[in-house]
Amino acid sequence: MGKTAHEIVTSDRFKALVRKRWSVSIILTILLFVSYYGIILVIAYGKEFLGQKVGEFVNWGILLGIFGIVFAWLLTAIYVVWANNVYDKEVDSIKQTML
Amino acid sequence: MGGATTVGETNATAIIFFIVFISITLYITYWAAKKTKTTKEYYAAGRSITGFQNGVALAGDYMSAASFLGICGMTALKGYDGMIYALGWLVGWPALMFLMAEPLRNLGKYTFADVVAYRLKQKPIRIAAAIGGILVLWTYATAQMVGAGNLIKLMFGLPYEVAEVIVGGVMLMYVLFGGMIATTWVQIIKACLLLGGVTVLMLIGMSHFNFNPGVLYGEVQKMYGVKMLNPGGLVTNPIDAISLGLALMLGLLGLPHILMRFYTVPDAKAARKSVMWATTLIGYFYCIIPIVGFSAAVLVGKDLITKVDKGGNMAAPLLAELLGGSPFMGFIAAVAFATILAVVAGLTLAAASALAHDLYLNVFKSGKATEAEQVKVAKIATIIFGCFAILTGIAFKGQNVAYMVGLTFAIACSGPFPAIFLSIVWKKLTTGGAVAAIIVGSISATVCIALSPTVWVDVLKNKEAIFPLRNPAIVTMTLAFLAAWIVSIAAPDKEAEGKFEGTLVRTYLGVGAE
Image (cartoon, rainbow over all chains, first blue to last red; front, side):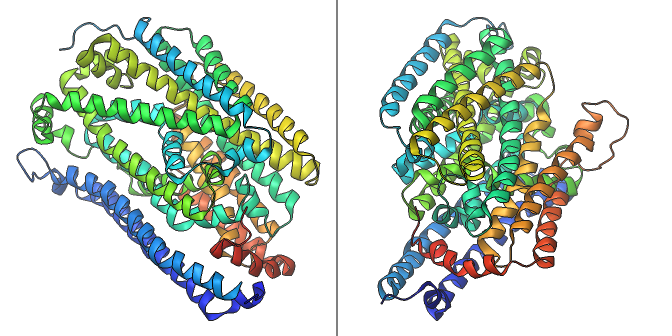
């Protein structure tokens, strides 16, 4: 109880919290980059593939575009679920035991 | 199909809807004015906005008339490329969530400069941040104001200058009297109208295709050939496309009017919730906009769309007229007008905070001024930027300002973004390093765009561009990070490093956040 900023910041729990936060953030950011730039590069180099029909009129390109939006939204949702269930609880617990 | 249109003539329903919108929003401004006495209320709505409300307002700030009408038109005329262009506008939101939203909320007070200056020297940071911030806001406001003048001329038949003065005048009323509370509610109302209007347009459009996107694509293919559904010329140079993607994605993380919204909510958890809602609404918006564009291509026809406006900006209003007659067209036109008003109001408030909070209070007054004086100066700054926006809007009449939005995002991701991000994560960042990042990033982005094919060839009519890329972000953002690194390593600042520990508790636990 009543620890100084220095004690909190150098504690293992705090360090683990920050590490975990950035691991999750960076993994999600990488997934976002890979999906978005993946789509851009497929459009640049795979025009023929994207033109192939999946249904009668829908082609891979249209599906990929919609996938891009849905996937970006999903990543955001994953972050929120993680932060609400893991991050916030750990923050509360650190605050209770150390402040 | 492809018959006469009344687009461009004075439309009674449009005027009625618009007057109703203005009356309601001015009434809200009157109500907000009574609650706007302190700087916390003026800049941050007293931190009383909920996560959901702020999410809707963020979506409102981001969904401009240019993206609504522009992406509809682009899909109607170019098909698939319009759809992919829309995707680029969404991907910044997850990045904002992962990299910045919560630390930004915990560290700041009213502006992003609060975050950067938190453990560094106030004055140099504030000056650099104000320069970078105003540059971003001014280029964005100019694009919006010129777009506003043209659109209103097209839709209502009003003279360009009158449109500028109306947009500027009404917007000033919101910001001047109602501050952030009024601006937030104007954004929320506008976002609901825009999302609702586009949803109705999409549903009525789809009813002509049995609510089956496959049938719609089939009709598009029958009328215009399979080319409309395939990737076209949008991604010809992959490096340019990657650079554009970077600017769109990370530029969002440097837009002062977006970042400022995070201070209207009580805590980091609410900030997180705002981004989730904003991402949901904006994602939905960009999913249905291409459907409206494709529907317009089939039902209205490309010939009429290009006849009314070469760029295709009138695709959505024309579709509305065809499906719901001139009352529905009037409603969509009024929504577009309201959209412009709300976006410019958000920009003006952010500019006022940069001028009054960053420059006046923290540079000229060294942080010492009474509440009453600060609010007064904030209002004066609001009037200055508002009038400036109207004047530049008129000065740029008839100019091609398409490059201005690209410039906004290029500067935002090269100037403010590297400085904010590094100040959150990098212990060794110094005052000089942060200033170098903002100045090098902002200036190099501006210069590179001026020398790029977009301005040097398309606007200034030179034969060959000096800088090869249309989107310089990949180069200029790298330069900004390099500048920050070199300057910080060359002249370390032990004092700022020592203060880093204290900021960590606030960044990650929210302890001491305002």
